[in-house]
Image (tube, rainbow, N blue to C red; front, side, top):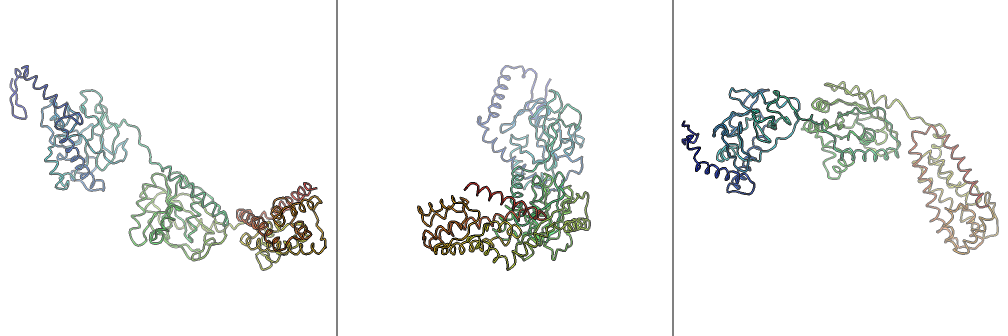
Length: 614
């Protein structure tokens, strides 16, 4: 029996049984194995060049399709790759071993170059039955893997020609096979598996060639998750702005964001809105803030502040802003929250302007809900073109709005929440308001000076007690009240020194003989520098002033040492109680209870000090 090979040579059964022919075949197979081993054989370099060209060809074909280019072979589930991408299959006989240039594997039945039809495009013009549609169950998005093996039967000249014309011959392709391992597609050698990926589309992890048609057997794909680094940065930003807003009046929140990604829309009246939202929203959503590109990203300094402290991203207001918003759809699907101000700019006089559609289109495109948020108090904390002043900020988070949301519906929800937040004023104490009004007026400084002056002479109550009462009620007046109290202490101390030097003894209530003896010993050993022990040992300042006068210490030296020692304690105590008053702004209605506890604590502490020096 005589047969004709594709190359035109004649083969007979007798020739196949010839020992010389068998030896020649073994030699050819050995040379083929040498080509396949990486780094060996005369065809190694040529194989590397072929692999590089094919990788470039794959990128040229995939690039237009990844951006949504139309294909020329059809639409929908029947899309299949054209035969121009499948290479020159069928150049060998069925069942014959063929060599793949550049280190590729050899195929038996159904492989490239074997003469069998390609599984991606059957001979009847339809998709093969064992070829599942890429959008079926088990599909997951991802970039296609480049084939780095050898040629698939397509010649090097054909590949180079495809690259020279920019891949125009192959841009109509929609799908291609990337098999790992290359094996028996028809099931003749058992349940071997191969990987399927469509260029520009999803993929199926693993498909059995002999199993049911289109049945994916791989693990279900994981949903995208927010990076841990972004969540950690969100926690740090939230802690930062919580501390800042607590020191400037406090922040209160009602409501929570839903699970998963969402688009947060809020009213905008101040730059402090961003800080309030970062402090109130859940850090697990790693919120991102849409910021005006022409303001926050126009200068390097503002750009760094916006990115690092507010997780801001630029949104153009002069054209192209919708594209900037739609670019965050992937972050939304990963579970992050994108915060936007649909008004586009800060409102005037607390009014709510019209809403633009960009934020709503973003939520519809990403398939996430819209969460309305109402803010109140930020316009008083940091008014537009104004300066910072203490105020309580209130944040109200509403229920998520699902489905297509109109601007009117979103605006109505935000307006309702803003009115609700503003309708709940902070509770306050009438006693605190009266105290703050007095100490913040022109009478505050004379009162602080007179209290400290009297204590340096004979008054038993320390000026720090007055600062604890006044600075907690009016934190903004703490610094000037503390300085006034320090000045009164120094002036009173110098007067007490002169009175004691003249031989007059002023009354010193709540002091003990041991206190006087210890002060005399320190002054005899250290001179005027002994007053540095006063802020920490519990001895009243009037005892040091009187003893220094009787020891004839120079008034100038005593004033310098006393100013250095007393300034740390007096000013420090005033600022500490001011911070306490600012942090407890939400508890101002308990100011009366605070004064009762303060008086009780001061009386107990003074009793312990006197008992310790007795």
